[in-house]
Image (cartoon, rainbow, N blue to C red; front, side, top):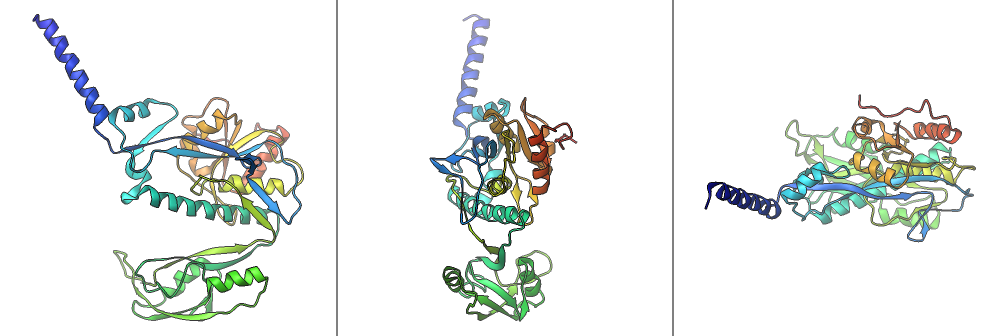
Amino acid sequence: MPRRTATMLASTLMLIALLCAGVFIPVPYAEMSPGPTVNTLGEHDGEPVLQIAGRKTYPADGHLNMTTVRVTSADYRMNLVEAVYGWLAHDTKVVPHDTLYPDGKTEEESTQENAEEFSQSQESAKVAALKELDIPVRSWVIVSTVVKDAPAEGKLHAGDVIKAVDGKPVKEPSDVADLVTEHRPGEDVVFTVVPAKEQAAAEKEKRTAVRTEKVTITTRASDDAGEKRAVVGISAGTDHTFPFAIDIKLADVGGPSAGLMFALGIYDKLTPGSLTGGSFVAGTGTIDDEGKVGPIGGIEMKTVGARDKGAEYFLTPADNCAAAARDIPDGLTLVKVGTIDDALDALKDIRAGDTADLPTCTTS
């Protein structure tokens, strides 16, 4: 066999071997790509996304689209060829597998966590929108979660309302940790709570009088590597009662990143006129009860997905602006927002066609 032919044959066989390795050998990466985008002012699967009862609502046109990211499943193992293709593609992003599923988290655990975050984001969106409209919302501190095998297990339960710790009134979730850590590990702390079932019954019966209980728990030392704090093994959060019903109907979506767009959609439906003036506005961002907008993941995928659906403007959390501005889809304007007020101001300018001075995102 001539040397040239032998060399070509060996090179071909080597290439085939490399391709086979690339196809069959898994690599520790996962892929993110643009997911569905849904108009919060419109319908999804045949029913309105935002459903408000017990309060006058107004027609709203245009788009206030929430955006999503599609990710590969936890048990999917990407091969080298797919990873290289993802790195080269414009509309996908390849990231380390542990970025999406840290500490060996299963897909079921990730889905549950995302569902809880999505539910909390809906509550915060409602609170932020109603506060912006000066509509009173009743709030109280609750037990959000109880750590397994912690001192509080079996004594406190998720949904219990925390009225006081050691007789001192609790007004914010942070008050609970502050008061518990005044103790040394091994000391008793007394919680005054309204049991979750009692609170639910009171709300259903529309009564303000509730039965409280005193619960004594012996603290233990925290698992922190540094100075040991006294803990009981709970996390505290906030629950609310709204003056009228607001339901968000959107299945198969998780995470907290739709909070801003839900809040704007609620605000739009409760006020005359149109926030967008008929424009196609999309966006993303977490939101807290006070209307502060927080950063999210997958911003590059969300801008691509929004533009593919026709968005002209994209409301972008200030902390995501630099990353988003590195690769802006043609025809899309990224508007920087840090609060719901920033978003409303930007929408006012968009509605009026006065967009020259919009606070746009830059790479610096």
